[in-house]
Structure formats: structure tokens, C-alpha cells
Image (tube, rainbow, N blue to C red; front, side, top):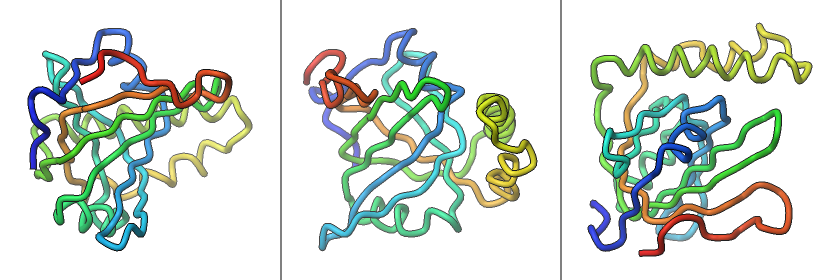
Amino acid sequence: MAAMQSESMVLDCRQAAFLLGPVSMNVASRDAALTPSVARAFGCRIAADGRELTVFLSASHAAAVLRDLRAGAPFSVVFSRPQTHESRQIKAHGVRIEPLAPGDVDLIRAYGDAFVAECVPLGYAERFMRGFFVGVADDAVAVTFTPTAMFEQTPGPDAGKRMGPKP
């Protein structure tokens, strides 16, 4: 189910640069009984026109999220920079779940390297951080969506504030 064109937003260069990392990415959805499902994402790609965003999920680790999305549930993803806690949440009404495209495995690996480099100075062991990425590329899927809203989620007085153009 794709979001209606009138509800979409376009990411600008500054927003896109933040989303591409180094950030932690966590996705969420819910089932028909409103039970939440969450999973970690392992990188993203942004369409050249800024209208679509794709995040990469491990099919085995994100089974509940993928089940909910296939049933048409709404979707959100939170991007948070570990060193500063700067955070953004993006929402969407529908997604496309697809196999990885050429080059996506390289994006997942580059994301992993950047995320590890971001977290090691915070005191996390490199080996521990790399453990998050073991086997991810083997069963990864691409979840593509049209953002309908972005929210500031950095702790502080603006947390929860809508960013960018309103639909």
C-alpha cells in the first residue's frame, strides 16, 4: 500500500545526510490488535529525488515487523546518532518489501562500519558492535516507503515537533 501523493514529503539534502548516518536505526509497526513490533534496521538508501526511503531489515530478526507491514500496518523508523542523541522519527502509511537491489549489500556493510566507528569512542568494544551485523546481509530485505511525516525526537524542548512541510 503506497502513501497518497498529497501526503508525501521530500527529504532535503541536510535531512538525507543525517539519515544516512552514522545513526542507529530502529523500525516499528503494529498488528491488528495494536501490539507493537520493533526491529533494528541495518542501513538505508534514499531516492535521488528525496521522495522515497529504503531501510534494510534482517528477515529473520524482523519477522514480526514484516508480518505487520504485509498486513498493511503503518510504519515508522527512528534514526538516532549515538554520540549526540540527535534523533528523527519518520512515519509512513505503507511500504514495499522487496529483495535487495544491486549495491545494497555494500550499503549495509558501509553502514555497519560507520556505526561501529561511531560507537567505539563511546566505550563499546568493536567486536561487540560488529556482532550486530553478523549474517544480516544473508537474509536482508529492503523496505521502501514514502515518508509522510518527520518529527524531531532529540531529547529536549522540541522533542515531538513535526519537521518539514506538512501534508
